[in-house]
Length: 403
Image (cartoon, rainbow, N blue to C red; front, side, top):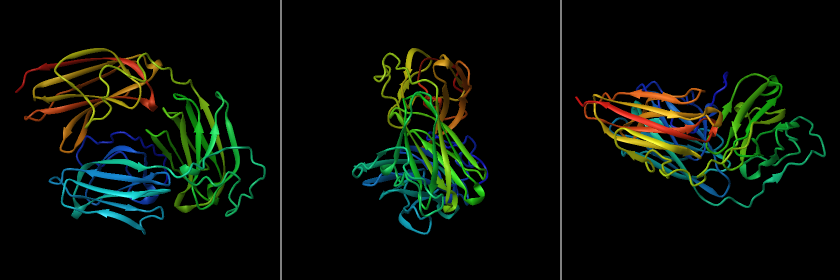
C-alpha cells in the first residue's frame, strides 16, 4: 500500500448506490480493514470483495452475522485463518437475507464478503464473541535487560506479545512520552496495551528502515480502529483512550515483512470529565444502536440537557412523508467535546447517509427533505469525535406538507 488509511468502527455507508464504501480499498488480505466487535456497514459492487481482519483472544469464538436484502443482491460470507486466503476455515452460502458463521478467531481471522454471480448491494456485518479468554498472560512492561540483535528470528526482549492475550502493558504517566527501542517484528505481530485515562489522546509512532522490511501500525480502543500503512520510514497514529482506560497498539509487517523498529508513545490532553448523569446517561437511554435501541420521536421537538457518555445516541422519526423537511440543530460547547451528527434514511436491511454535520466548531446543523413518495424512516446518530463525550441540546423542526 502507498497511503495512510483510517478506519472507524461506525456506520460506513456511501450515499450514492454502488460507489463502494469508505473502507476501500480492502479487496485482499494485505489491505483488509481491521475491525473490532460491533456492527459495521459496507457496499459490494460488481466484481468487488471486502476483506476484514478481526482479532479475538484465545479461548473465545467469533460470531459473524452478515445481513442484507437478498432480493437486491445475494451476498456470501467466508472466513480464512491468519495465513490468508489460502486457508478457508468456514463459509456460509445460502439463498436467504443473512449468512452466519461461528469460528475460533485467535490470534486473528480474515472475513470476506462477496457478491454471488456479480451481485451488488449494501450490507450490515455484526461481530460478537462468546466464551472466555484463556489464562491471562498479559505482562507488565519492564526495561529490557538485554538488547536484541535486530535480526530475525532472535526477536526482541518484550516477546511473547504476539496476540492480545500476550500483550505487553505500557503505563503512561501524565503526558510524559515513552520510547521503546530495539523492538523487532519477526514472523508475528507485536501487540502492546497502553494504559492511560479515558479521554486522553495517545500518539503512537514507529520508526524503521523500510528498505529492510516495511512495517505498518494499527491502534484500537475497542470502539474505533485506525490504521497507517505506507512505504515510508515512519508510521504514526493518534487515538483517544476509551472507557476501558486502554488502547491497543499493534505493529505488523506488510506482506509478512520483518524488521527492527522503535516505538514512541506520546500522551496528550486531559482525562475525561464525567458529566452529571454519567454513567447513567440521560433520560432517553438506552438508545445506543440504530436497529435495537433508539429513541422514537414524533414531529418537531426541542430536547434539552441531553448527555453523550459513550458510543452513540440514536433517534428516529418514522414515516416522514415527501414534502416535509426536517431541520436539526445540535447545540454544544466544542471545547468540552466535539460532537458530530449524521442523518440516515432506512433502506432494506440497512441505512444510507443523507446528511451530516461534522465541523470542528460549536454546534452542528443539518437539513433534509425526503424524496420517497411512500415516506421515509429517518435515523439521527449523535457521536463524539475520537470518543468525545459532552452534554448537548437537540432542536428539531419538521415543516412542510405531505404531497
